[in-house]
Image (cartoon, rainbow, N blue to C red):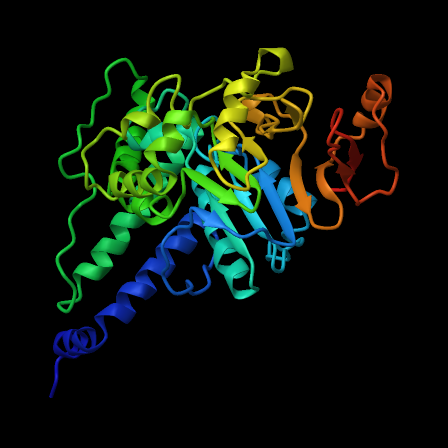
Length: 393
């Protein structure tokens, strides 16, 4: 008669991949509270996409799950149960999910769920690399909160439990402890962060379980129709280097192919994820001539859409609306601004959706025309400032 151990090993030998998938689902739900739908067929991350009927751009989220959901609802992308409702829209989140907030992993799982649900609806949900993704993959944790570190500590506990379950199956390859080879002391950091920091290194280093899973398909530069997306900004030398090449090289680095440090164009004040030449809140400080040169070298592109630099007065445009800045500092770790999203619609053009009722008065004082139909958003005109309308989040 077959023993319980023999039966277990025989069962595992026949369906090791099914068991592994079940364990991964269990770990995912334990960490995030989300059951991820099946992924779509794999495809390379895009660098250029045609113009959709509806394009939504969302700024920096910085670990604030509540504000992230508010922004998504503001754009009509999720319902009260967090199910995707955006249909065939193309959605671009411009990076900086990590740091300054306490729910980074939960946001990553939510965005992954929406990517999969959008694909099933004929839509496209694209996430980008910001400077804080690059920093964390390199092991720079200066802006990690205590609860943010603890979230990764909890993830590591569940991930290890999952590995223990998988190790019982003889049909699966032996699994390496993600902490193997990682230092457990962090000079200058409070001791209460050490365990969480070790978990972050294990999760986010190049080819780490979280970076490999959630960031290798991120893009660093993206063209959608006549809009160019980048977290910080692009200079002429970046365009000359090649947009496709930048995306491919950053993805290869995250996969662990090229060492610990990111490519040079991701580091320094003029890096694609750090540049602020076009996002100063004072419009006259923006380098419009360089911006126009960059846009002229990419056929069909009219505007650059950026995050990275907080715009205290909400989404706005500079350089004759060729620079659109969408980081409104919505995370509580960045000042707690009220959510806004940018929409480019084939019917209404470029407009801002906002949940801030105060903008009616502010814009009237600035001389902007304010539409009054709640829920429609407002046009970003070709000549003059952005017009907003309040939308219920």
